[in-house]
Image (cartoon, rainbow, N blue to C red):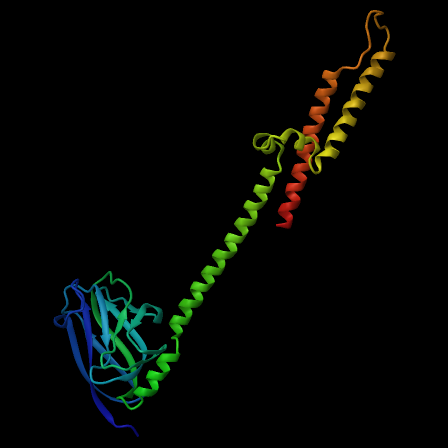
Length: 273
């Protein structure tokens, strides 16, 4: 059975001037290694409480398991401090077990205290004491990464992957938009001396050109045929091919077919993206 040892715990209160020795309380206690220790601190003597720090022992290097830390405010509300709101200066971290290769272990409450503190209750266990295994823990420290550090690294990696995926999606979207702009007839007319010819005879547009010619010819023949067989027709009316009418029909058909084709192609590329 382990022998009992006499140790000293200390609580520091940040009164607005950081953690100073004059703003602290010490409490001696007797503990057996591995057994639970619960300490209650009366904090009513402090006018202002901006921060809280707990030092479980001052005597030697140690392994400490922090089980609970509760703060009671002046309005009688008691708050259990979660593990992720605590910081410590441990050398090796197996949260909630912490190894200290020095004799000054500290636990900080990582949050602003809005109300004045009335008391604090800390439950912990001292699992090891002294330098008997110091070399072993020093070697572990060289080759280990704490669970908190792992969680932080994984969190950063997850954020980076999400940002990368978002950038890839944005790049695909911009690429599709750029292709739409560069392949548009207006862009070619503005940025390329051969734009007009590319618009008409470019890749895919030759079919649009031929279809527009066909529709314009059909329209002109339809009008010509109706005029020829219509009665009565003045003798002085000359039936002739209207290049102006043909050109207007051709231009309208070409633009309409090109716009429909562009909309279809744009939707198809977005589906592929």
